[in-house]
Length: 272
Image (tube, rainbow, N blue to C red; front, side, top):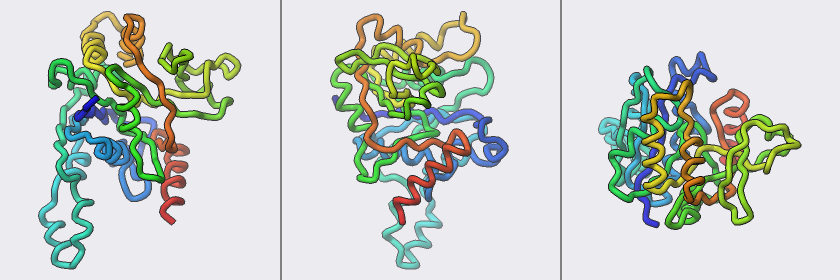
């Protein structure tokens, strides 16, 4: 399947990381020498993605600044014999699109994705990746490429293995004998966990699945969050296939201080 578009939701206040997220957008929290979202973006580029749709908050400016070109900086690098660093300033041959999500009204993981679906071509699949965590691979290979390959003509999702005793902290993936998604079990007692594989919101969705997410976001009878797992469950119950694959890299997360510190240790130790 040839997939060229990725949807990366990065809106929200990042309240779990206040007060630092008052000044730094949550997707821009640094891991090593890059913001966490750039690990997601670089993985997409390696997989052949050419259009990235960021769903941002009204107050977002730092993400745009990071990915825009900077003529003054490029000129400085050229004057000082540092041309080799110019590709670090802005990804080449990638179109960045920015869609604002209101901080009022409906919220949840279905909402930002639904804002992009009308911009896709009929029948077009897309990658959906949350922007405040990622997968780090020392070998430089792409998890997104693996997701696209696993999806075939349908859909796929990435899972991350955790110690069995930690399954009570996450949404745990249950898959059938063919490695296809059955359901998510939220924060189960480890004795009841269907696997050690957790959902980290990294997907390839067929156009049909994306339309279901869009329709779910239009509902007005839901109180609380519009979880993306609800239309996923509907999609599978209607015969859709969602192949589950295990991440080969290491999970890096900036959502908590402890997770952010661990992510930096993973990346920085590899740089030494």
